[in-house]
Image 1 (cartoon, rainbow, N blue to C red):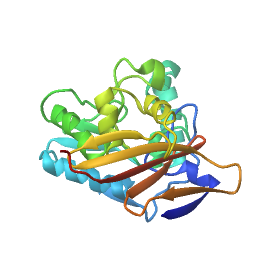
Image 2: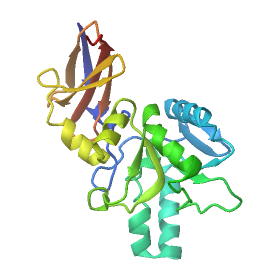
Image 3: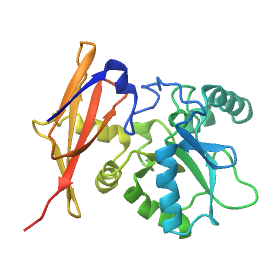
Image 4: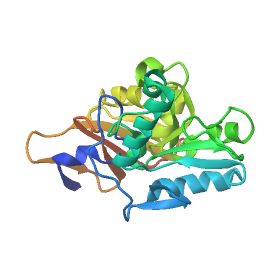
Length: 254
């Protein structure tokens, strides 16, 4: 049995943190050792960049899809927001540009993609559900990515439909979100109903069984999380009040 003690501020870190108009990003994710360039001045967290490269190679998309925007500092997000206010007005900006400290781009886990062409709209790049874009959309969940702001979910995300914006949440969470046709907000609400090691959410994929559970952070300085020796596991804060623990192991279906 592994016993881990996590500090309170750990709830603000991890692949599954929810960053939106309600929950601000608490970390300072500038261009650090944890980020890597995916082309020019576009950076992502290292593990996200690796996952993105894998899917781009798998579908042979490097010559067809451009990386438009990745990691942003708080200063950059403020500049983009204020510039959009001046050029596009308040209504447009509220729909398509997150407030500083409320943007997923500041996490280093979000990427805006566009069809490769000479002139690409920085805020609203073209990414239609056809051709190579459709192929990316159909396969990205296998590599840990979701379309973060889907159509007909604006009342939940409070962001307009953005077919170009993809967020890394890791596998199997990306596949569950795709299968259930839900947003990251809805996924958090779902997983919070499954208490860790009491009634975990079960998901089977190929020869792996995943158990996902939620544990509210302790009021003390540390939260203890126990994991069986036989399990592989990952832990992510939710950027709200606790942790999402994912365990997996091989199984043989008879």
